[in-house]
Amino acid sequence: MAEILTLTALGDNYIYLIVGAGDAVVVDPGDAGPVLLALKGNGLRLVAALVTHHHGDHTAGLAQLKAATGCRIYGPDSRCISPLDHLVRDGDLIDLPVGFVRVIATPGHTRTSVCYFLPQTEGGPPSQPAANARCTRPCPADVRPTTGPALFTGDTLFTAGCGRLFECDAAAMHRSLAKIAALPDETLIYPGHDYAVEDYMFTLSIDPHNQAAQQALRHLRDAQAQGRPIVPTPLAMEKRTNLFLRTDDPPLAAALGIRTDDPATVLAAVRRRKDAFQPS
Image (cartoon, rainbow, N blue to C red; front, side, top):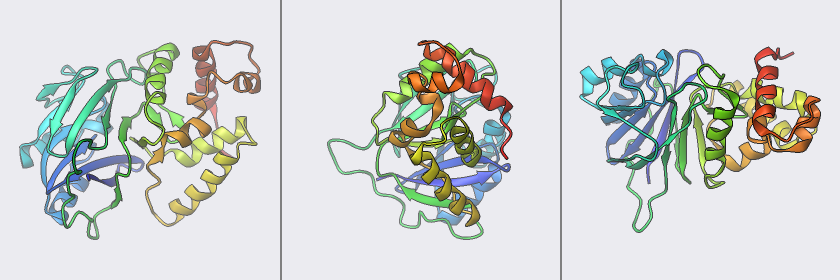
């Protein structure tokens, strides 16, 4: 079974290493340093990089990693992502040593944003993780077994939040989030940033009686105080606590003071509220 190393970088970015049998695939390497350190500390060979979108905090480490390891780079935008070996499109299935990865187009944060879905192995035993797959200090990483399907969401979906709408409108983001919501509830969400505490505070500013969000916020604050990564979260939990996945819920529209049954309109209203939110 593949394992996922969570690396921290650039203040609040997450970079992920998917590990299987001594090989590794990196997701959104905004900084090559933590990746190279984790590879060396765990005796791993980097074979590929998966990029969710073109923003520099998700791509800045690509050239250095390519030069150091010869890894192949997969991404959705040949114009803005360099270097790039393979242009990916919605529905592509990428055959990697750590397993097959499916590309899901999720425009919203950017026009060409994608997510990468790693399902559990079926029809045979899962691949075995590297024997030394736990990162040694001072590597800023945490290893968590993949106990279900994994989705690497970049800046499309965060824990209790979603990305800003830079290149698309709310309708496009709603369609993308609906694709994610249709995945199995046990899917583990691996976002591109750690905004969870603020996003749960925002959730509770609109839905103050959401007990799942209240409990999650307490847990996340404890984890943050101990310096532990606060990912992943199961999709089922996101459906209960993430306002951006609940835009077809009439009580949410009522809490926002709007009368509509259009989920894209609700999403736009939630996004405006979040953009202006100042945690107390």
